[in-house]
Image 1 (spheres, rainbow, N blue to C red):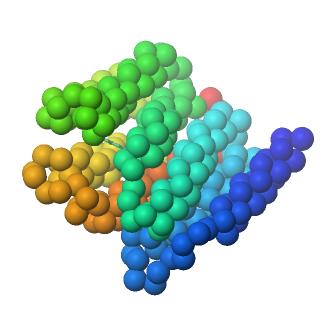
Image 2 (cartoon, helix red, strand yellow):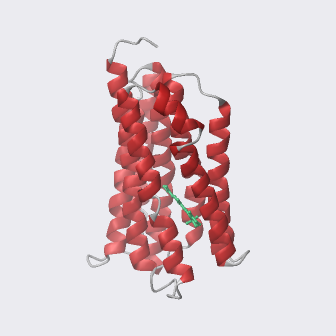
Image 3 (spheres, rainbow, N blue to C red):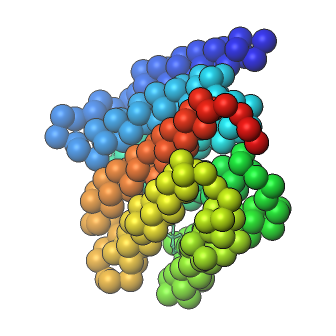
Length: 260
Ligand SMILES: *C/C=C(C)/C=C/C=C(C)/C=C/C1=C(C)CCCC1(C)C
């Protein structure tokens, strides 16, 4: 039954991807590297989604949720990428609002992965989940209020940075970091550590983009092409590679005799 549902949803995603790919007004120009990167990443996100969903069938029960969430992240991002790609190719613009709508769903899901992989190996208190979610929302809502012009860009940036620092604290030194340090087996420790470095360095690309676009006086429109390429590549690391790390630890832990 589950297998059937998963292969049907996989098919639906594939068809959806194919139809949005064809329902295109403007044509992609061979020298439009931003457009090409939107195409590449949107297809990579579809492929990653299919892969994560199907692999949920293969891993042990307690790892299925983590893998499912990885697939949801790439699915939500793929759909946004179809729209952004369309808007870019036909207008040369990317309304920042698409990115934020995507982030509002995918970034909390990515953060929850820290909670989920710890939950797969031990009892974890719900406080970790709530603190990670709260920090993520403060970071994104702060940034959005600034980008959308509801509050000045500097205060917005500071609120957003505070949210990010709070999350980093939680996964390095806070309860999540401590549970990992004291209770995780080696494979989970190494996944946790890689994921944490992604949240530190991979995620730094977005606030750097904010600074370049809004705070150093470069016209946001002028820096749009470079920014889009940077964000698109960042998403490969932060969404696909992040999911692959989880897939790797889930498969390795599932291959072990199940003792806990
Ligand atoms: C898949 C998308 C991801 C992982 C997006 C992450 C976005 C951020 C880490 C954004 C961070 C920001 C700040 C730290 C300061 C304020 C401005 C933001 C929202 C760009």
